[in-house]
Image (cartoon, rainbow, N blue to C red; front, side):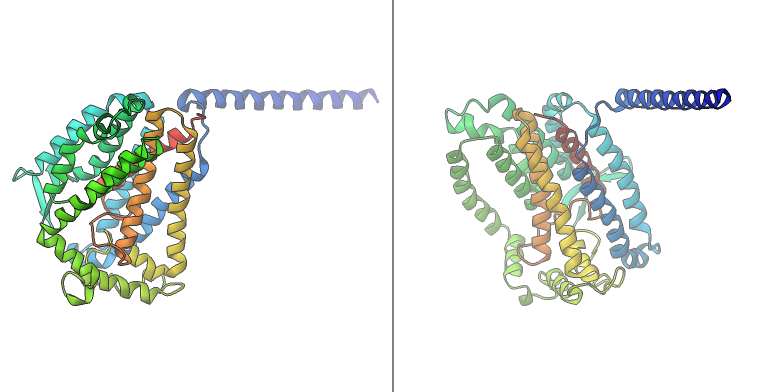
Length: 399
């Protein structure tokens, strides 16, 4: 009996020691994690939506670009390998932004605005800029090519959020209550229209309006400015022949099926072929050099053809989840800078995704805007992931 009691005491002593070691290990790991990452309380749904879209983008870039890359570069994986590198850099940018103190972003607003304005101005310099599709939107620096207009979206959001934190309580007149948010960014709009890049300028303006609306800027200022900007946009369209042709091609793509209506018609055919369940991943006919550079702005047409209506609904659902989590974050934040920043990033994702899908479906004239996290493109992908990293950090804040 005494021998059995001794064995029992030894067993309890052993288990107690094991439990103590486990508790000690867990405590050390928690302390190490908190020291490295701080209090980690992520919005898991937001993270899941971001990385699900990123993974889906990798698959669709591979599927949509293989034939085109094989024909042009003799390497079917040319665009996929580059997009894989862009994704890796973008994930690093996401994690960096997620751990970046928000106050450092506030301090960087004006330097960022000046740097982006200078970069957009550099696209006017022969030898530095690269022309494609009749537009000078790319810079060649030390062997690297990037698109300053993607950084312009970030600069506008950051600047407007900073102005909101300083001047939101001063809405005595139209100048201090509204115009002040556009004065600093006016050179960016002028340079974007000069490239020309009407689509990015329109996105920046729409994002700014939604930021002001979410932060409580008086509605009469917003409505008055919209009334002034509609005729201004009409003048910008009517004074440029290529924009007029785009609008006419949008209204009746079959009037010029070999040129202005070609992409939209091929997109229609792709969606028609996809029907409910699609023709199967990798089996698209539109990407067989019918739809020009299908891995870029019209990648959503390949989604519709290969994955069908259910695939389209899946992609739209992921964007809806991402935007809804962003809106939840906006609703929870009280500081005007943080609220404006979250509203700007969320609006940018939602507006750009909507514009891209609407263009591919023939609901809007072509604008040259990529589908966030899905379309091929290094500057767009890395910048978007950096912004979403900021949103992920803001989503962790309690108020």
